Amino acid sequence: MRILGIDPGLATMGYGIIDSEGRKPRLVTAGAVITTPDMRMYERLLKIHTDIRDLIRLYQPDDIVFEELFFAKNVTTALNVGAARGVALCACAEFTGNLYEYTPMQIKQAVVGYGNADKHQVQHMVKLLLNLPDIIRPDDAADAVAAALTHFNTGMMKTEYRMK
Image 1 (cartoon, one colour):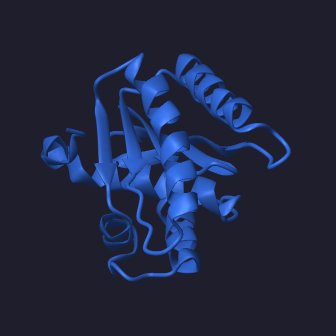
Image 2: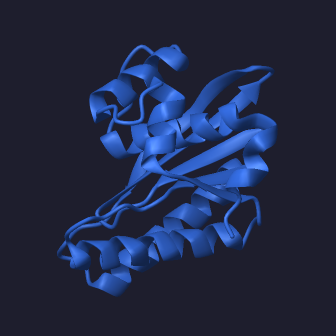
């Protein structure tokens, strides 16, 4: 099974793809779709849509996993990231209905064993779990891989996390 994890963002949208080789996951690729503030909003959203669509066409994941958005304060940031998530979700839905989502706390719990773990702990555990020589960069890509690993470890219970 091939799993694409996505960590939504407008400036940096992380992605990570893992394959399951039996009971052990293997990193296929990780990176980020980058947009800049000098781009118009519609240009940023179009780039995200196009790059995610191209990524899906190239790697053909079986399941796609999103980290749920969580914002407590900045409404403008929440709206912009929500728009970015929406176009990425639209690109994914063009290819499959196997779309899932996990909260940041669920991902931290699954990868680190502690729901309030910090970014460095998550990055370090992703490195250890995949037996990588270095921590995945940027941070958003490591978070996307962590989401994919969470889905991998969910196994038969994955239907509980299917997007509604």
